[in-house]
Image 1 (tube, rainbow, N blue to C red):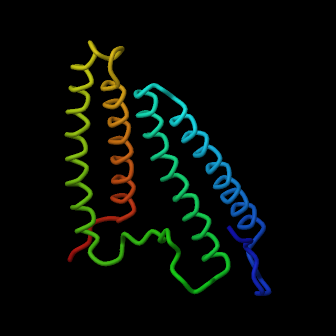
Image 2: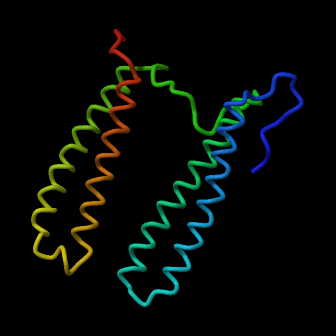
Length: 165
């Protein structure tokens, strides 16, 4: 990742430079963690550990990508590069707000049903929670569903109030 300086007289603020440094330092640290996870998976004779570490690697790859996108977006904004940042500004109010609200409400209902189904499945797996990875995986999916609900609530909230279309 490159330094966040340019030839403009204003340049990025101290806060922007510090945040950029934090993000890029984190990217470098995550790369080291990713390498450790890969080495651990390769060294292990446990199929279960390799499976779980692979899940962690997938998450770390996504985290790495998001941190890079955060840093690149901050850089684009701070240096006024004239390009859209990779991570867009909140613009749910553009266009048809009601369509965004309707969509998020429909998806929230489906996620809530998924949440209910996963809780039921979680209870059904109690007897194998100490002999299989299944219970853990369902627990992780429940957490993902909570994340999905938070994302959809955020989008719905920021879409604003319904308008007359």
